[in-house]
Length: 174
Image (cartoon, rainbow, N blue to C red; front, top):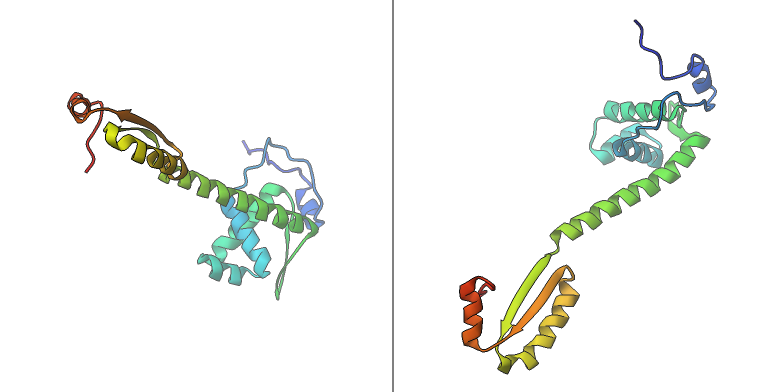
């Protein structure tokens, strides 16, 4: 039995006229790679220049842009002998594609930055003779440089601090 097409019977004619038609499936599955490739092609107005910039073979870029057009259900580029020109829909996809890529890049930077920041609980034992001098500096620097760290300062005589170390409630750092 033949699988039902996800496009209307008159899709080819509508695509040729660059008209939109209703989708027959739920949602659109566009990949960031497709958007990134399309934005590069649109920026350079050339598949070959985009391929050079992206270090990807030209046929692979062409195929991903073609898949993007199929998924969107409309032409977004006019292919000419001198390169490409954006359709009116292509101009909108280009503008929104830039915003999507910037947002995705910002998300990646944010997640990477969070993963690189130390997080957790840290206890520091300080003898009373040093607390007044060092504790405010330690707290201030920890808040500025290590916002993901929950700092606990234990003030006590050296013998008591050694007891914390022995009980495993603190660790010595040299």
